[in-house]
Image 1 (tube, rainbow over the protein chains, first blue to last red):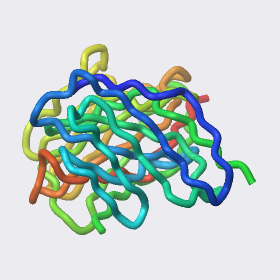
Image 2: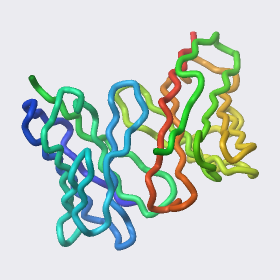
Image 3: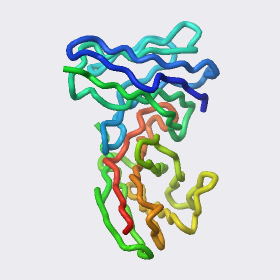
Length: 108
Length: 118
């Protein structure tokens, strides 16, 4: 699976949009972009995934650049419960390979 | 949505004993499950891929005789940490994906099992 690069940490004010970037410049054509998050001492929670088109669900939006070399996860109205480590992963099948992720802290 | 459950969520054992962790897919059948390990302040590291009815595939550096994996049914995989030592203390997490879309579908994770070896 391709390697991803994410900032180590980010802060966001409660109620504001949180925009989490991810670089995956070596992504191949059949690899999807997945986002998971992990709240302390829990298993990872699926957020969203996509291939080429932008995606939106009840949790977040995923914006993938046209060249697919980077993406942004958007939490439209961050709450304190969104404080977690967010992992961006590219995957063609099988297991997920986790990088270091971004520690998002939502501030009151 | 699909649910993966682990048991126990926490276990404390003495050095030298063996500990078994169960991973169950509650509403789907999983021919493949994955076991991860996570040390404090680190990311998840894949340990092994558990295949129903056949031997598990271990990642480089993971001792197969130390971490025994059994996937005897389509809804249950077990990880046994044999002769546990304090350095085996970690957060163990399993995952599985429904067979309808094994390559691109959502991978569901269990709640994790925290092992502390005294």
